[in-house]
Image (cartoon, rainbow, N blue to C red; front, side):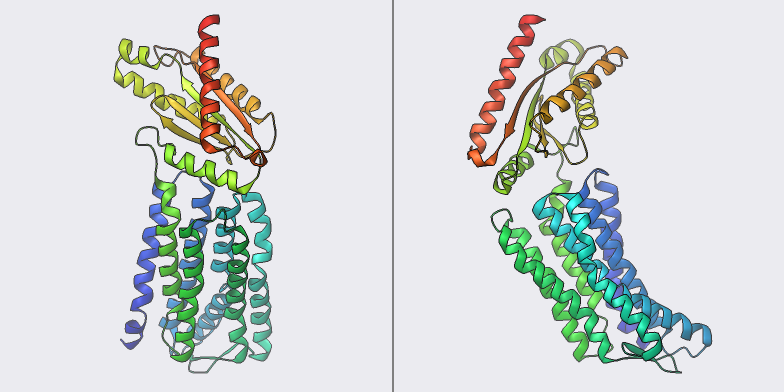
Length: 375
């Protein structure tokens, strides 16, 4: 019974992790890279916490099966100790710099503590440098064990220091999340070292991840109630962020032509169907790193995170092809058509968000007038 009292905290942590994993899987867009990265962190913590719980349950059971199972579980736990931290650093990398490919490439560097931990565990089989397991199946740590958490702590500290270089593009919540993810597990680690036998590390990681979810990731769940696209506020925040990053990108404003006529002639349900179809067509026309937003009413925005000057031409052509294919199928009693306003943005020109939005709005209405004249 004493063992189960000790692991109550870990069991509560498991319940929180299960909730967060299923909540993210159920409510997130499968295209959302940020959420996929976050789910990876949750699963890694869940696996480590599960290993620690199992080890506590097997502790002191004096049978060959329990002994060898416990030895393997402890070895796996210590080898995988650095995985949640590495995946969390990749997540922060992506949230700061917005490039999933680069974040995945740098993951190999972030995993260095895991490689070293694995090597230490292999050496431990022959030397006992990290831990020992007595004949009574009782775990005892050796000085090599302290190297494993120290490497992860050092890696998080390095990331925290380096993140200060990007303070212009990091909002306060992001910086707070980085700081707490370093402070909470570190504090728990010191307590666990002093009071050996109290399982605090993985519950502490769970708490830090829950706080990060509330500070940073929860924003990804904010969607337009009808189309399930990102909202105007999220677009404006992303626009400001992209301007601060000083990387070239493009935006397209899209207006659904004759939306009022669709509502008047076919009813508001048909109007909602037109908006839903538009949202679907637009999302099918962009790459996974680009984002579609519902800007308001029958207006949409696409933010294209590409430095190519002709990126908007390529996307508009894809949208036009999708519209033509849809209209030919006669799925709806009305045909869809769009007007576009697009702009390639070079942050070095120091254009304000208001100027950019006014410009694409003007270009979109000029395109609408032209289409009416040539219809």
